[in-house]
Length: 124
Image (cartoon, rainbow, N blue to C red; front, side):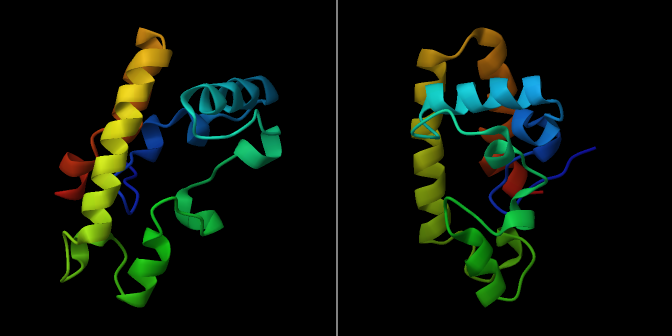
């Protein structure tokens, strides 16, 4: 089973989405800082996630875009793939390179299955 986001992330593989205990959330906050997704180790309440549309924040501004285009997911849009998707995939490739450098193999594999299969997931 999968829970694919607007941008092609897989929530059910995401350590942030899956983390429930304070200890798990603290580890995620440290990892997000280490890979450069946060500028500091944030409090557990800030790192907690129940899915990207739950808090209307999107690094790629896709939540607003899908609302404007009256679709649930990017791949349902008549403009897909658009420049926002192309830019998102480019940035995702950069993030993946950084994760390969700073993560353990286990962390990298976890992040890969969560975030670095966007293009494939968007075709579903």
